Length: 205
Image 1 (tube, rainbow, N blue to C red):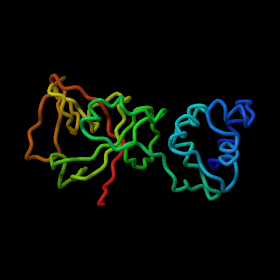
Image 2: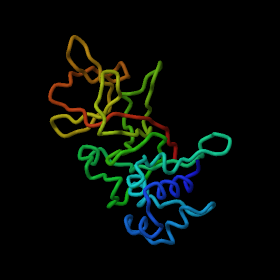
Image 3: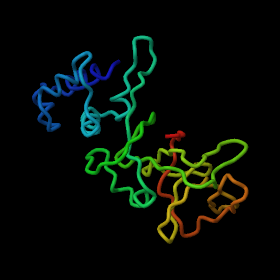
Image 4: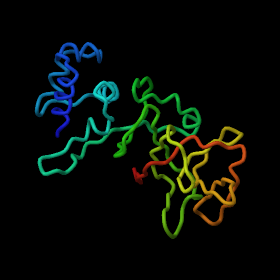
C-alpha cells in the first residue's frame, strides 16, 4: 500500500471528510487532496507526526508504503540530529510538534515523540571484531524504551555528561562497557540510561 492510499483509507476509516481531516490537523483541504492524490506531495515533516498520530500508525509506516512488487519504497521518516547536551535533555525534541530547526537524518525504525539521532565522538566503541561504531557514526536513539543487558545505550552520568556504551550485567550489577579494550568497564552506579540505540549509520560528509 502506498502512502497516499494509507492516508485516504485511514481518513475514510475514521469517517472523516477531507475538510474534517484537514481541520483536525490544522492544514488546508488542498493539502489533504495532494496527500491522497497519486503522484501528489507527501505530508511535510512538520505534519508527519500529527497525520500518523491521527491515523494510529507510526511515522515510518506513514511515509514508507509498499510497491506493487512488495518491496519497501526508499522513503523514510526523519529524526533530529542533536548535540550531546540536547541528548541529556531529550524532551526538547518533540517529533509530534516540531518547534526547533535541527539537521535531520532518515531512519528505518518506527519513531516516537522523543526519538533522536546522535553523532559518535571518540573511539571507545571501536572494535576489531563484532560490532563497531567509528567516530562520525550516527546513532538513532529511543529514550522511551527500557534498556536491557546487551543493549547499546546512551547514559547520563552524575556530571550530566552523556556517554555511549554497551549495558552489561555481571553478578547482579550493571556496567557500561566500551567495545575498545583500551578503555575500562565502569559500573553504572549513579549514572542513568536515557536512551537505547535502535540503529546506526556512517556518514562521511
